[in-house]
Amino acid sequence: MAIAGVVVAACAIVISRRPDAFTNPQFFAEDGSMWFSDAYNHGPLAALDLATTGGYLQTASRLGAVLAAPFGVANAPLVFNICGLLLQIAPALFLLSRRFDALVPSIWPRLALSGVYLLMPSAELNVNNTFSQFHLAILAALVIIAPEPRSWGWRAFDLLVAALCGLTGPFAYVLFPISVLWLIIRRRRFTVALCVVFAVTLGLQLYIGSLHPRPHYPLGASLSSGLLIIGDRVILAGVFAQEIYTHVLHSGEQHSLLLAAAVCLLALPVVAFALLKAPAELWVFGLIAGGLIVAGLASPFVSASGSQWQLMATADVGDRYFFMAQVAWVAVLFWAVLQLPRVWMRRVGLTIGTVAFASGLAAWQYPPFVNYDWPAEAHAITSAAPGTREVLPINPGGGWAVVVTVK
Image 1: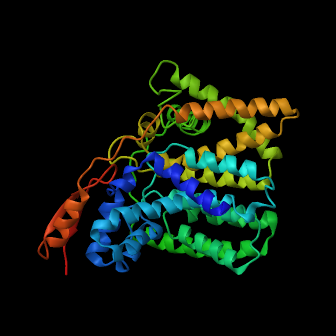
Image 2: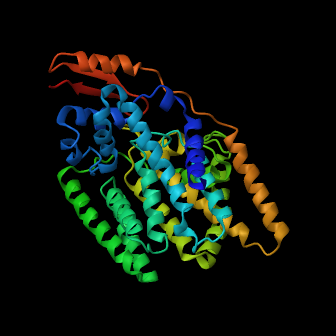
Image 3: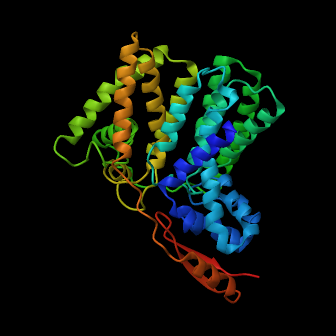
């Protein structure tokens, strides 16, 4: 019953952010323009090995189309969103499982961190199949740092998560070297198996990348943009549960750069303290989050035109690159507060953190998706003559999906 209650609560938190994803599901971004379109034109299984313009295999995202196929075109967006929901809540459920009893014996810190993870605002990552891969990356990071599995069931789960994450997006580039580092530090036998899985998947991703190179866009990298990105999109976003420039710091306002620099300087002592005193599991989780930020800043794609760094510093784009770092930063702060020497200090620190986080939750809401009347579009696809080209509207980030009807 406790497990069922946790699952229901996690689902309720996520669905409450965007109920229209289930009451009136629409395709989001590549869910329609790539995964559904390719699966419809080529067949769900045949589309699994198609690389995207991003230069990577996207296995987890394309599996959504495989699972949706038996339910028909009309139900495809709903199945995609359910897949996104399940991957979104999976890290919280895993953290609350018995696997972490030895690492964090008290359930309350794990409940708090799971709540932070589920409540952290991100319209880009909330309930869609396309960007659920970033939730999968968090789950893979937890698999690496979790105590070694004792049963065959948990071992199979860990290997499946590692393989699926490694075959989806660029995550193997970060997870393989860090899993090797973790093997050197902890010398656990099962970590060898994880290293092998990440090594194989990294090899496959390198091969795909050589055949379909990832396009590069002007970075426009600068110290000022970097400070604004880290200060507002990681540090303040984590503390105040804000999406970009919605609550505390607004880029372009007077002294915004100075404030962002001050925020970064204030965070440095906390990070240094964590590096020196925190459990290895915590800083390895932070290292993975940092690796994803470095990868995102080195080769981002938030727009086909304009400076990528400037856009990330001033516009509500690319939240996927920073989400795990926001969660890691809050986890580090939470741990640091628990290290304070007096009970009253810990209580004051936790109270201030709770109020700050809650203030952000009350300051935003997700606008509903544009209603493109998917049932009518689905009927147009299924009733069209073979070879007809149907141009389908897609909600943020995906443009238009062209579907060729076949029989």
